[in-house]
Image (cartoon, rainbow over all chains, first blue to last red; front, side, top):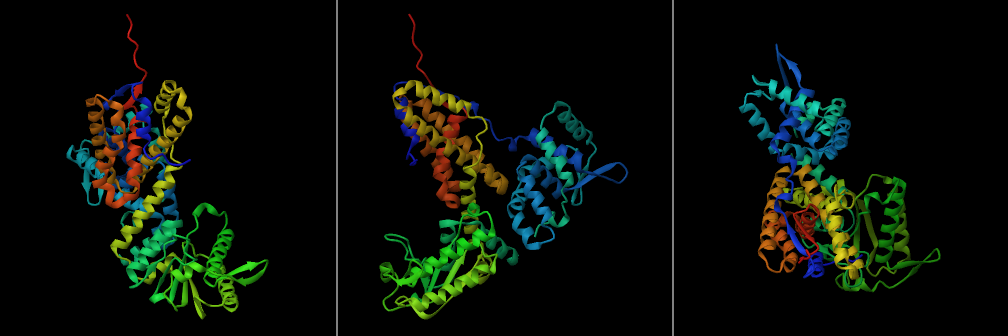
Length: 177
Length: 331
């Protein structure tokens, strides 16, 4: 089929004088990627499911690992890409080739940095060198994760996080090149 | 790190296919070789030569087969050998009569190479060179072609070589401009590829608007069907563009999100403020393009127009812009 130069003009001509326009600007849903509640919920699940015990009663996770985990959890299609990257670790050239786009993507995820900064400012998380650890208010994070489980929301994201337990993410993958 | 740039560039070249691969190779050679001349395929084909340099003594033939066109490497090898042999035969002005080589006239060559010049070396540039099994068939065939040719445009002692993405990437320095250009091409190609497969999650609002349109204009069913298909294609392009930005360049995705909000506001203002709303509909995609152009035009110029139309199709599909049958006044 030949491409129609201006399909909207054609539709306008078909509708002219025969239909009532309906304009509802509030009907367009913004991308969930910039929804603070959503991003905090995914970050909470990523932290709860992947953080390791540290010291007496703290848990922590490498900041770049958390960033990668939540990035993939929000974009389930990338799970296969991460798996391929992980499996290509023995081959430096193949590894770089398979990871370029994912690396560029998750390293540029500024929204996640903003979410972590917010959680740190609220005392929910705390910086511990290159790691993020539980802060004095970390119970909130646990409660948020539990609530998403109980209410069955963001199940796809949690499913991805669950599958990510079996994907080997090395420090070399996290530290850039 | 320079090594990473070379590898990334090689990977980008390998990811490109068809005209995009040829365009990128020509752009690279143009930047690296003083006097490189690309050969446009108009008005009557490129005569088998995609470019030449050194005042007509070095020739370049490109072939970037589509990645999903072959099921096995063996098939890919065969396709590469067949295509490049065909290019070499045209340069040598040969064709087959049954299984015998016969001389023919490649008239376009006289309009491409400088008078009296013959190609002394031909580089065969491919987007996949992971098998040495293409070499013997090509070198053997070229030796046969030289013997059979009248050698009007190819020197009788001419040589060939085969270069793949790694060789092309390593041959000259890879700078930021080269990488950026390659990334843009790969991005555009990926968006177009993704647009063919991406799912429109909930098209029922869109479908119901098209159903109303069919009710209003039963005399235009075929045209409406074509328009709906075109708008869906544009919508998928917009979704693919968004997905690619989200997965690879989140900072630009945020810019797109802000642009989308501005598009919605501007289009709503125009539609609500007009007495002849439907006359304003064609300007909606122009508004989208005007908003997207400053942020994305330089980087992704070739696809911004389609994305602009796709954004308006999305507004129709996701509800903000629509239509209904006129209400009939009673009493």
